[in-house]
Image (cartoon, rainbow, N blue to C red):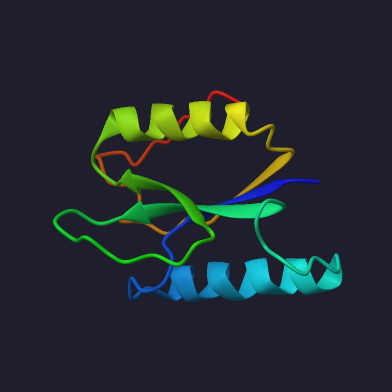
Length: 105
């Protein structure tokens, strides 16, 4: 199975990012993947005004306040035949007044 992990991610300082990083490593170990890519990848939600240098498992970056980035992320996940998405949520990560996120999966 191919998993997409969606949330903040190191080097961005955030507890959700740390959790997501540890979760993806644990899933890889439990499913005995020697390499995270292509079996798992991260869609990193980045805060405004920062240009983080993400590790190779980050395949797509979403600017938290750019709605089209979310649409493009959904298209990216669909084109990569993603089987499951793990979405990490905490208020303030996804931007916008109501923090709604819509993925067209």
